[in-house]
Every structure is written in structure tokens, then in C-alpha cells.
Image (cartoon, rainbow, N blue to C red; front, top):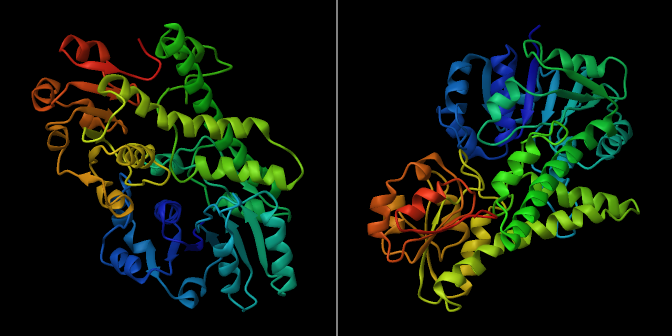
Amino acid sequence: MVSRLAVVGAGYVGLVTAACMAHLGHEVTALDVDADKIELLRGGGVPIYEPGLPELIAANRQRMAFTTDLATAYSSAEFIFLCVDTPPTYSGDADLSRVWQVLDGLPLDAAERVLVTKSTVPVGTGALVKAELDLRGYRHIHYASNPEFLREGTAIEDFMQPDRVVVGADEPGVADAVARLYQGIDSPVMITDVASAEMIKYASNAFLATKISFINEIANVCEATGADVTVVARGMGLDHRIGPHFLQAGIGYGGSCFPKDVSALKQLAGNSGYHFQLLNAVIEVNELQKRKVIGKLKRYLGDELRGKRIALLGLAFKPNTDDIRQASSIVLAGRLIAEGAQVVGYDPVAMENMQSLVPALCCMPSALSALEDADACVLVTEWEEFLGLDWAAVKELMSRPIVIDGRNALDGASLAAMGFIYEGVGTK
């Protein structure tokens, strides 16, 4: 059954949602306040880097439209998908200002519609939104929560082949109507109340972040005791109760979701009168992990990093995205620059975003140009391009053959055999 959708927000979540819903056969209009972004989309461009997204939009062009005009987007929409940013405020709470702006622009006609929130919002937001809709007399606009579980870099696969589709609604039939939009996707559909759907999103991200911080703490103990965290994680992951996912030690998580959602859940608990001690530790471990690289560099280069040339390989918070939000590279670059080091970096797609944020970082046109005359290099993002480098050539280029592998992604034994000084995270 074909439905008409308006998707509010043409960012990572919104564009992927719009393209995938069009691929499922629905008529979709994407709405955004950024006129330049909409013009780019109308002209066949895509404003973000997400593998497969340009091709998916092109293949479903006949079912997609892009606009900045509210009336155009809402004129015949049966479902309005809210996909706006909810960035953290200074207090750690989620900023819901864009959510309320969407409510201010909802159509005044009496047509039955469902407002579907895909944005990650604190538990209780749905109740506030429904109360506001009732207060404004919008009883014809129903409400559902449909949290997203998209990973940047694999977002299309995550949408089309999800582990589960979660739909929360407190009105009979509303959740079923939203669930029917996903016909054609062979995955379990979990129908809940709104508050539980909101909490599933936060709890899922907080748990995954906890696994990352836990294995990073184990890595730190491994470094002190002589154990190898890659072996330890493999042994842990074979236990079906634990599983292997998110047990890769490194220099900490980043991105637009984990840092924001963990902090927001901690703040939500505090606002509710509960002190979420575990999440305090998760956040602290993650922040300290990013800074441990500085100590490793000083171990090999001396306490004085001033004038040393340090190459950062990878600037995005993970491979296959140009997103640098909360990326470890930002902390590393900032700390090294503060130490007086000459910091150069290279990333296949994220350099423009990074350069505007950290102007003192010198972005280079290639990995090899970044490594030339470097006193040390730090693998920050495990792009495939870096894993396949000609490391023999790299050794000849570098001033000192020092490699700090922040993702345990390189073959340390091979690099050591070639004459590199190699150090991973929690490895021998």
C-alpha cells in the first residue's frame, strides 16, 4: 500500500529515511529549512557522504521531491516524519527546539495525519508533544515514536535490513498504520507504548557505549599486565551471552549519537531523581581514552612535543562517513597543537569539515604526503585505504618510523618486522 510521507529534516537520518521509504514504494517529500541543501538535492547532488545514498535517491527520483515550503510538503502527507537534530545543550539535556518548531508549522486543516518522531528524544517527549497537540486543537494529528537505529556508513543496509523496527503509540491502530509503511522489510516489528519506544533507543546506545568503554578499560589493564586485549576480546566474544560486537578496543567512541545519547540519558536520570553512576564512568573512560595517545607519543618522542610533526590518519569519527562530530581526531589535534606539535592530517572525505573546526590542523592531499617527514603517525580512523598502504614506502618517508594504532586495525607484527616502532591499544 502506497502512502504519502513528508520527511522533516534532510540530514543523515532524514535523507536515508526519505530515500528508503521511496524505495519501498511510498511518495516522499523531504523538507528542510536550508535552501542551498534543497537546491543541491533537486539538482541531483547529495549534501552528506553516505555510501549508496546518491544511487538510491537517483533510482527512486520519481517518488521523491525536495522543498523548503511547509505547505508543499504537508499538502497531501498522511505521515509526517520528524527527523530533526536534537543536539546537546550546555546542561547535557537534549535541545528540543527544532521539535517545537516543527509543531509550530503543522498544517491547520482537518485532515487525519500521523506525526512520527524518528529523532532521538528524551523519554517523555512524546507525552509532551501529544499534550501540546491537544492544547492546540490538533486532535486530527496522531502521534507515534519510531526511533532510528542507523549507523553512519551502513545506514541504508540498517534501514532495509534492520534487527528490529520499533513503533511506539498510545492510540489503537496508530502503531499498526506506521508499521505497515515497512511492508517489504523482513524484520521483527515491535509495537510498544511511546515512552518505552523512546527508552529503547537511549538504552541501546548507552549499552553499546558501555561495552566500548568496558573493553577500553580492559585494554588499559592489559597494557599494565602484559595481556593482549585482542585475544581477550575474542575469548569473551565467543560467549553467546556477551557476543563479539563492540568489543574492539581503541581510542574511544565519537559521532553524533553515542556521546549525545549517553549524556542525555544520564541527564534524564538525574532530572528524574536517579544518579546513573555507570554512565558517569562510561563517559569519563571515553574522554580519558582519547587522551592516552599523547602519553604514548611522549614515551617515544620525549615529554617535549614542541616542533614534532605528528600525522593523523583519519579525521572522521568512523570509516565511510564525513562526520566529525565528537571525533577522537578533534581531541587529539587540539591536545597536540596545545603541546606545540606540528599536526598534519588526511582523511578521504572529512577534511573540509575538520579544517573549518580546527584551522591549525594542516590537512594534506594524501596519506603519503601527511606521513612525509613525520616523527610519528596515529591511526585515528580505520579507513580501508590506510590498511592497504605501502608501509615499506611509508617507512622511507617518515622521519621516525613510529606508529600508534588507535584502532588495533594494522598488522603490528608485520610493521615491527619492517622496523617500525608499533603500539596498539592494549596489545603486545
